[in-house]
Image 1 (tube, helix red, strand yellow):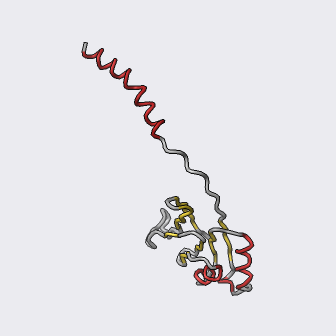
Image 2 (cartoon, helix red, strand yellow):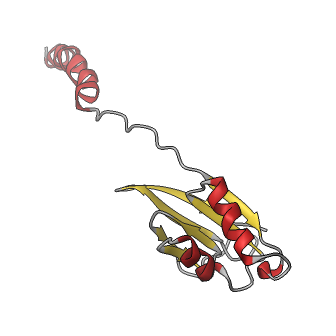
Image 3 (tube, one colour):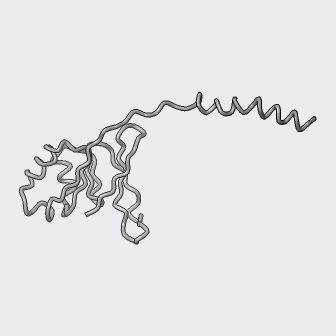
Length: 132
């Protein structure tokens, strides 16, 4: 008799347990559109006009820019664009807040991880990896 009571309780509770996650589910977040640009500025931009680098980024209307061959110009480029967010060690600039893991982060191959996290909306982040 005890076993049949447990079975009956299980049959009565199962629909409640299955329905609970459906009613407790939060609404799906709305999609976020961001433009990511990768840009080799060629030996720190010394081979081309610095102003042309700025104009190209503006023309692309990018939100996040990963620079290759930045040659120490990362912060200067962000400032020229009027952007407040730059991670010079990772050569990433953005219109949105950027956060970088510790520089000691290394991938399985032993190379530094050139990853930053961009806060595209309050509390919503994307990972951006910059490679040459």
